[in-house]
Image 1 (cartoon, rainbow, N blue to C red):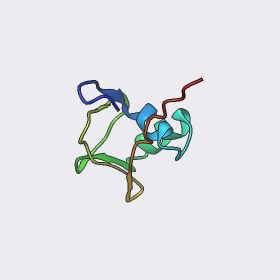
Image 2: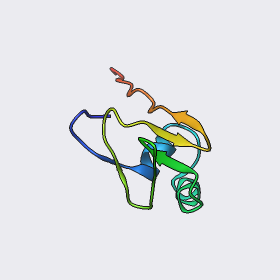
Image 3: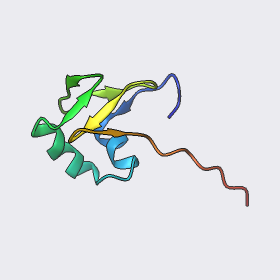
Amino acid sequence: MNNNAATRLNKFISESGLCSRREADRFIEKGNVFINGKRAKIGDQVFAGDKVMVNGHNIEPKEESNFIL
Protein backbone atom coordinates (compact mmCIF):
# COMPACT_ATOMS: atom_id res chain seq x y z
CA MET A 1 0.00 0.00 0.00
CA ASN A 2 1.26 3.46 -0.86
CA ASN A 3 2.35 5.24 2.34
CA ASN A 4 0.34 8.42 1.65
CA ALA A 5 -2.77 7.03 0.00
CA ALA A 6 -5.86 5.74 1.70
CA THR A 7 -7.54 2.53 0.58
CA ARG A 8 -11.18 1.64 1.06
CA LEU A 9 -11.49 -0.91 3.83
CA ASN A 10 -13.33 -3.52 1.78
CA LYS A 11 -10.65 -3.35 -0.92
CA PHE A 12 -7.88 -3.66 1.69
CA ILE A 13 -9.52 -6.78 3.15
CA SER A 14 -10.14 -8.37 -0.24
CA GLU A 15 -6.58 -7.66 -1.40
CA SER A 16 -5.29 -9.46 1.69
CA GLY A 17 -6.77 -12.61 0.17
CA LEU A 18 -9.32 -13.18 2.93
CA CYS A 19 -12.47 -12.71 0.85
CA SER A 20 -14.17 -10.70 -1.89
CA ARG A 21 -15.12 -7.03 -1.49
CA ARG A 22 -18.78 -7.94 -1.04
CA GLU A 23 -17.92 -10.48 1.63
CA ALA A 24 -15.73 -7.84 3.30
CA ASP A 25 -18.73 -5.49 3.34
CA ARG A 26 -20.75 -8.18 5.12
CA PHE A 27 -18.04 -8.58 7.78
CA ILE A 28 -18.03 -4.79 8.24
CA GLU A 29 -21.85 -4.59 8.47
CA LYS A 30 -21.89 -7.35 11.10
CA GLY A 31 -19.40 -5.40 13.23
CA ASN A 32 -16.60 -7.94 12.87
CA VAL A 33 -14.00 -5.48 11.53
CA PHE A 34 -11.89 -3.08 13.57
CA ILE A 35 -9.39 -0.41 12.52
CA ASN A 36 -6.93 0.50 15.26
CA GLY A 37 -9.29 -0.95 17.87
CA LYS A 38 -12.40 0.94 16.71
CA ARG A 39 -15.36 -0.77 15.07
CA ALA A 40 -15.28 -0.04 11.34
CA LYS A 41 -18.16 1.03 9.14
CA ILE A 42 -18.81 0.80 5.41
CA GLY A 43 -16.72 3.31 3.49
CA ASP A 44 -13.95 3.65 6.08
CA GLN A 45 -10.45 4.25 4.76
CA VAL A 46 -7.26 2.42 5.73
CA PHE A 47 -3.93 4.22 5.82
CA ALA A 48 -0.41 2.79 5.97
CA GLY A 49 0.32 1.71 9.53
CA ASP A 50 -3.32 1.09 10.47
CA LYS A 51 -4.06 -2.17 12.26
CA VAL A 52 -7.04 -3.98 10.72
CA MET A 53 -8.66 -6.94 12.45
CA VAL A 54 -11.37 -9.19 11.00
CA ASN A 55 -13.01 -11.74 13.30
CA GLY A 56 -10.18 -11.24 15.78
CA HIS A 57 -7.41 -11.86 13.24
CA ASN A 58 -4.90 -9.23 12.15
CA ILE A 59 -5.08 -8.60 8.40
CA GLU A 60 -1.92 -7.72 6.51
CA PRO A 61 -1.89 -6.31 2.99
CA LYS A 62 -0.25 -8.43 0.35
CA GLU A 63 3.00 -7.02 -0.92
CA GLU A 64 2.89 -5.61 -4.41
CA SER A 65 4.79 -7.65 -6.96
CA ASN A 66 6.70 -6.05 -9.76
CA PHE A 67 7.03 -8.16 -12.85
CA ILE A 68 9.52 -7.41 -15.55
CA LEU A 69 8.64 -8.75 -18.96
